[in-house]
Image 1 (tube, rainbow, N blue to C red):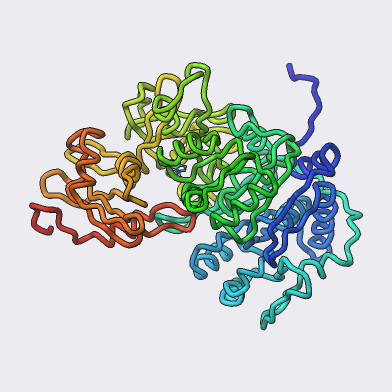
Image 2 (cartoon, protein in one colour):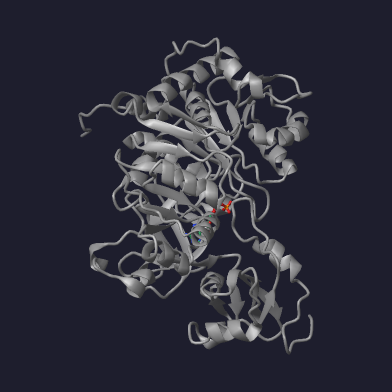
Length: 545
Ligand code: ADP
């Protein structure tokens, strides 16, 4: 027997309609790419998104067309997204930190037909536009006064383009399973792979994200998504913030400590989210200036492991609660968040940090398991680690174009490529990426554990552990360290510091100091490059292989 309830398709533009109706005067503040702080509201954003939709439709774009964006977090970028989704087209966020040739490769693969681009990235577009044969129109997210000179055809200033639209447009009626968004993984192994979100998955992900034990946000929050919209949908915030009517503060092109602090302070931001590198810059700025964070309640940190020392500083010195989160582009992206279950109520100090070092538990909407290489389930004992697999309504069922099919099994479990253990309370801890884990004598050594411990040393700014080929053990760990400015710790300092914190056989065979560790376009340590760099490294006592 079927239920007798209404079919109400889960469509993204309903989120914006809701925000405009219930929270229409709520502000969206932007540090504009041109410089000044600008202010708009959800009601105004809805009107302008309708204009975007109207103009895209007039220009001949329609259902299923991929419309790229190469842009910072701004109100205009949100308008471009919702306008695109509102005609049944697909916003495709491009990561400007990739090499121009990679961006061109991705655009060609996605067959992007139009592009919304920020002024900052016009030099990239000048380089690649002619390589993308599908590209018909380039809309520069600015006004005519700021338009740069360009030799490219079909380029228009966003404000000029919108000027003759009146917003008298009805959102397209769509199947909730229609595609609406696209984002490519950064391709740390092989070519980038396209993840294709649907209206339904984005709406459900937004509902998953706002749950109290997930991001736990409400209309009373002021949200600063530092995490870019081109990095896995700004972790869903461009959908979940309007869904609950929170004030939004968009940081534009500036993510340095001073700029972020200024927004946190002047806009009284209560909730923010970004990768650890951003918070390193902010914490450094706070340390140098002695400033405090009186308005901020909560910070979500993920994208790579949040160092314990960072969580500790935020909570002890600045009284800001840290939520450690894990996820990936393929999961829209949230997979787990580390809020405290009642089992841990009242924990403080190190006992609380022990739990927060883990990546947290899966919210409703994410199923999780760990398996061995033969796909046998492993126990949730907090020790046994295995391949982390997930399934849920906001998790990819395939990559665009069919690449990477081996990551999806017949009952929908997606192999994340991460290695993790899960404790009896459901808290998951990532111990590695499957391709990074160090295999020593048939056992696994977690590089993340070594890195997290090493950055706890007072003189260490950043650390990366990689496996170096070893004649007897297969691989042994090498610790690559960037010292803090003005500090020069020694190998023995590091090894003494780690001793006793991990099993003896996990201790690195050597420590090298470098000026810089390479990062991927999403701010993660680029292990492949690092491994290449140290390919011929010979560990002490071992002849080079
Ligand atoms: P890409 O896969 O292209 O590097 P994603 O942003 O989708 O980009 O990265 C997802 C990966 O980032 C996860 O599979 C995981 O390895 C890593 N990651 C994300 N959050 C965390 C975290 N809190 N701790 C450790 N690793 C994390």
